[in-house]
Image 1 (tube, rainbow, N blue to C red):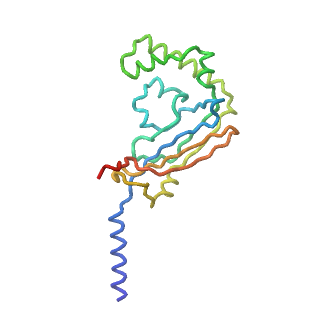
Image 2: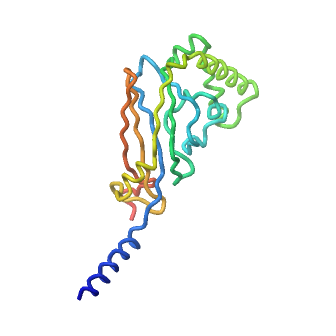
Length: 204
């Protein structure tokens, strides 16, 4: 009888492992600026590759400092970096920057995204961005703060959890960091679990 129970237990465990394979984990993070509206935030461009920026021009993505986006879906899907280091500092709002550099060439950026910008427009955007980057260089070193995320710890935390609702298991789950930057220099980090591809109610 003991032998039968032991074999049955092993069979059940093996069956569970087969029925519930480990799903892929994807990582994303989002910065919530509580300094606003008094300050914007600037980030050093040491983030991992962000899949959600695939349509963003290199004139924006390859700058030394990030001022136009604050969200990243780590690419490729299913890649879990050992660490994500986010370095940031309070910065001027766009209105304040424009008082120094002049109006932002928004039309040039739009035309670049659409693929029919003239060389003059490309040059206008490049010059404006370069001037802003030079301004950012003047931020004192002591003003920069750092946040270090360790995604493998979150993967372990959510290892046996499944997101709410139904989703595409082959694409796995997404661990999302929501980071609130507080005016006093502190920050709060909240993590949430989503499907990478959630099924809608009318899907089977």
